[in-house]
Image 1 (spheres, helix red, strand yellow):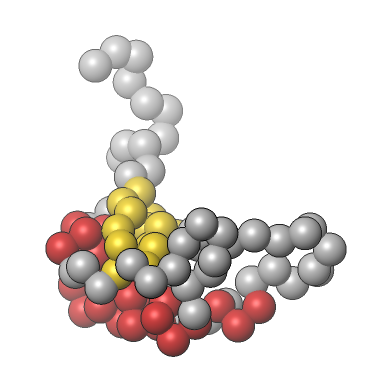
Image 2 (cartoon, helix red, strand yellow):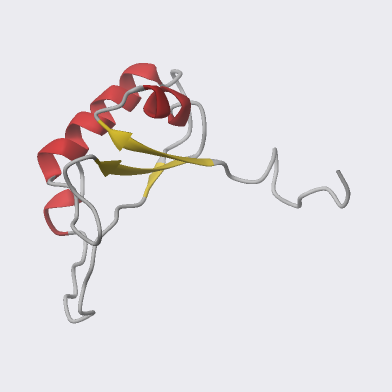
Length: 92
């Protein structure tokens, strides 16, 4: 496909999935980023840190050794006033 992407080796590929369904997260482990949601949360409600930690443990179990860091995005809402918007999710 032309024109070829400038990023090397390719454009970043992100996967999404609804935890606790595991297949999307096995696929996400092979790529560059993930946006997990949860069957019990959504519409602006952020997944609890314990659930995110379970998702990340599962992805790490299926990620190749030496793979670059995985980018993670979460669904949520903020009024924009909080200086630290990552809160308890950082490091999960």
